[in-house]
Image (cartoon, rainbow, N blue to C red):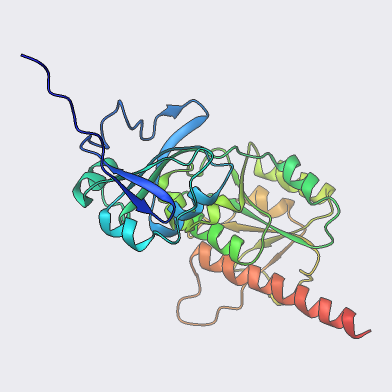
Length: 293
């Protein structure tokens, strides 16, 4: 008996893109390597509207698959990048099929992109780009192991124009879909730099004219009392353990956030946002002061 031919995939217009309905399971390892090693690095699903759209718009990000629900495809049609380059064709799947492809509990909002990790710059590359910058901010994270926190710090870094977030290679989360989702698109814009030794990285920053400030609750001066308008690196530790002794000692000075409520400690991502705001406030004040002269 002759073998029946499969009908051609159904395509529909989507803001300049085409999509196809697929009956293949997105969890099929022949189609979706998930967190496996890819040709250009680790491969993982990026999910959620902001994170997925940012990945699709990033020309450096190498993409494997784009899966969407019919509802998301309709709602996001005008926000999707135009086809071209290596942008994959969108596959229209039902929500259950997308749920099966992603980590349990992933809030995907009907869209997910299978992508390779971005190339990780080293600290010297970042410093070379900032060689002539009179002002810049870099964040150092010590013992921050929660991917949600690291992602949220990246988001704050992007919002306030920080140049990079630096973490140790060990005792820090890898770049995964959960971290990228928490960053809400910021992972495409802010360099996440991994170093072998955080204390040595601080010395390298100081050699590059960065003023290194350790944030610590028991510091004697408030952060607002420190000159943050120039080149500054802010070191933050996780809730509980905080900064390691050597990390804090290598910094030029310590400062604290002026918390005064019944709960003195705040989440590291919140602390990063407050500290970066203070840097931005001082830079703006300095610029305005200079313009008046």
